[in-house]
Image (cartoon, rainbow, N blue to C red; front, top):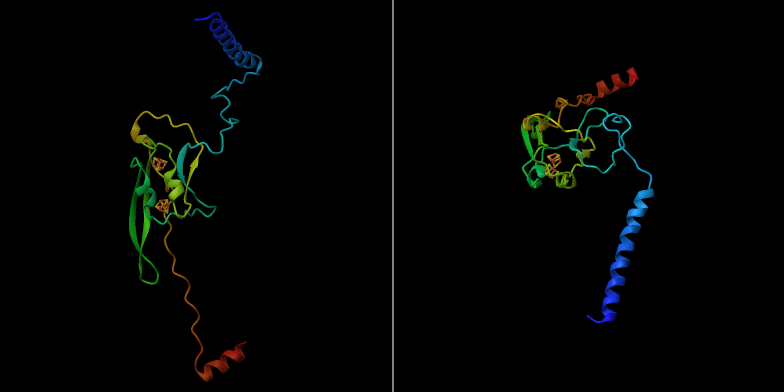
Length: 175
Ligand code: SF4
Ligand code: SF4
């Protein structure tokens, strides 16, 4: 190694050391924040985009938008979603598939959010609930449709149309 190379290498090493110390020095004077968890549980700020646990979105009337299509179940790479469905008869006599149970296994979920992104009804979301400690894995299996499924109510029948001329007259008089 020539003298020139020796000093070039020495200078490079010292410059690298100064750079490293700059980072250390900056952190040394930065104000420290200590989270007093769990004492600060009520005031703890969790980022909005944090993926804590999968939820089925309910509106103020207690309705969710899941149509039991099964797309989330098919797209989940870990099999963390299991849907139980039932067939119900509509007021017009047609049959329709409805959600019976939406089972989610938090223990095997990788929070990839594929289920949320592919749901055609925008029925799913991640809450930022993060306290999941339990004693057995079975307790991590949750039913997301926690409110009872609503019955389909038949629409009120329309008033019968007045057809005969006498009935039309009578109808006019009553008005
Ligand atoms: S949550 Fe969405 S994707 Fe999953 S079954 Fe319901 S409507 Fe389909
Ligand atoms: S976030 Fe990913 S792993 Fe978790 S339930 Fe949804 S699709 Fe499955």
